[in-house]
Length: 537
Ligand code: N01
Image (cartoon, rainbow, N blue to C red; front, side, top):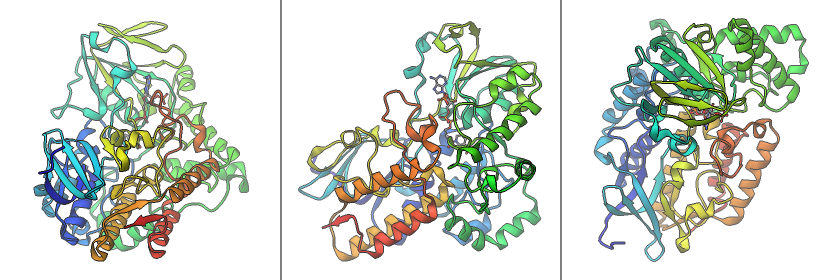
């Protein structure tokens, strides 16, 4: 590598929710020399790439947003409870402009390689545009769900398909016209569930290829009235406090009651009320033991199954849509608008590819072991190589030239999800081993960026060169994260939380399940104890 690389204090990778906030704090508050690289041609991360029909947030706008600036939250007005992708992207564009962040970001540039130069205590970073820069710190803000599960790796024959195909996570910026088209949609996670009703309403015919039935709760999206908005803005301090001090980062009122402490009729009434309210409250505000106790979970499973049968008119289709192989809530629960109703349309067909798997994509469509389905367009809503994929996609080398891939061969190993032993001064925002994807993401992102900012400030003011997780602390944390998961029903699901959706990926429950509140306290304690578990030099 060259030795004449330009020099910065910090390289930030990514300009989504995490990267933007990290630029603001490190550049504007600490006064550091920061450069950020972003693969897209603008800011937004997830909300830049995921422009598929029906894309909207599964968390309500007023708390799925930054809390760091009161001016920002007072001046920005959300149109609805669950804003659609263009509105969230507009918000992030506004944030980038308002805080003058773009000038620090090099767009259409991917970080391809990062190597820790031990003789200099510096990272050398190479990009797709051929730049080589050096920096003391790297802040990875690559996102937990950004490296797509490439359809070509999963489906034989894709190159032969004569129609058009798209992955939902790389949707064309000028949209896709489904009018008059026979569309096939593969995947029924949050994305497929959001896209289904919208594509069905536009296409001539929609075939949904479902491998695993999922539990979905109605979003009950609605415009936010001027009165509601005024009420939210008047109480932002309280709302944000509630988010920060909660387990999931949501301003909910979690139930303290277990499901077996009430009668069947009381449970039915609670579930009905929460179903009508919509969204994540069904999970958060029903019963405290829903994700830890089989009986409790079974009561929610039964309720949702009954709802599916009530909504979907064809009982055979309804039966196929009822999940049977994982507890409710152990995959990120999808939130929908008219998902189950869509199966009552004449132009929609459900194909169970668990029973008759997809064999290949042919020139004309999709062939399962049962039949061939002629299609003009295939939409792959097949998800992401979550939490580790985007990091491992970069050739990252720490001490002794050890690659991150090597260090994570048996699954991700981190201390607090913030650092990896042997990779000094590399911080991973919402990394594996932190609550991240189990929470309302902006809350987890702000907590991590704040922690990293404070840490770097401490390093700079004390004249330290390196901070790195020590092996013992990392081992203890990895064990603790695994044990916390084992106390719940989460590991029972073949979800992307455990890497089950990527062939060959080690099965490790990646996020920290004990809650944002517990985790925040632990991070604060580590700082109070002089960065316990980290080596500082
Ligand atoms: O991805 P997924 P996603 N053959 O991995 C199927 C967030 N998000 O993009 O379950 C056939 O959940 C796969 O089947 P199976 C949210 O955190 C948020 O939907 O592996 N099928 C599954 O049905 C979410 O959890 C929002 O058996 C195949 C689907 O594809 C995360 O992103 C909106 C297959 C993938 O589901 C990821 O959601 C959207 C194959 N070879 C997403 N490979 C909101 O904020 C995969 N599948 C609302």
